[in-house]
Length: 216
Image 1 (cartoon, helix red, strand yellow):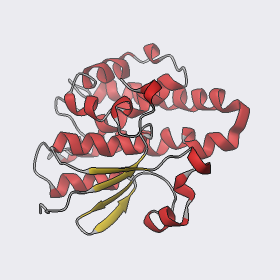
Image 2 (tube, rainbow, N blue to C red):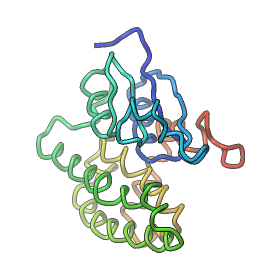
Image 3 (cartoon, rainbow, N blue to C red):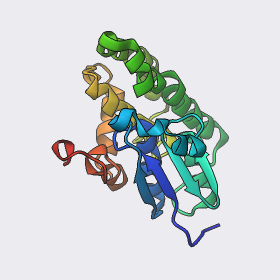
Image 4 (cartoon, rainbow, N blue to C red):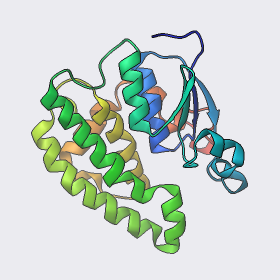
């Protein structure tokens, strides 16, 4: 179901959810355009009425693709997987596919939302301790799960949506000074994935809206 019009990603360089979508596009070899949404500037460009019309939750990403607009990164990734050729992002085997979804949901629902910008702005001065607590809590659950499911990557030896979720979350953990060394499986997988081009080109340090002082 290829289309002549390139998808448009409305995102932010350091947004975990935006990064997930960028990884998925890169793994599938899909060309797309980016329209950055600065979550800080002007009080947050995601809060404008114009952007609210695109994504009523006023979060990034929003993706215009095939005549529809999608938000929620896991929904976007699964749509890309189902409509574009290239490597599968969800395994064919039902058990492995369920494990991929379990890991993805653990990160995307159980860890990441507790340190997104809107939440930590409400927490205020305690944001570092808050973020560390909830990332550690999530990683303490994720580490034993990955010990059971992982091969070369999160589930077996093929890259999947679980890996797409893991790498941005580890980046967040490092931003908030979490000791990732306490989680050897997570650390190993993250290091292996960062060697892959799709994870490199999509990295926050290499985006159109990356500030000069954070650019690789």
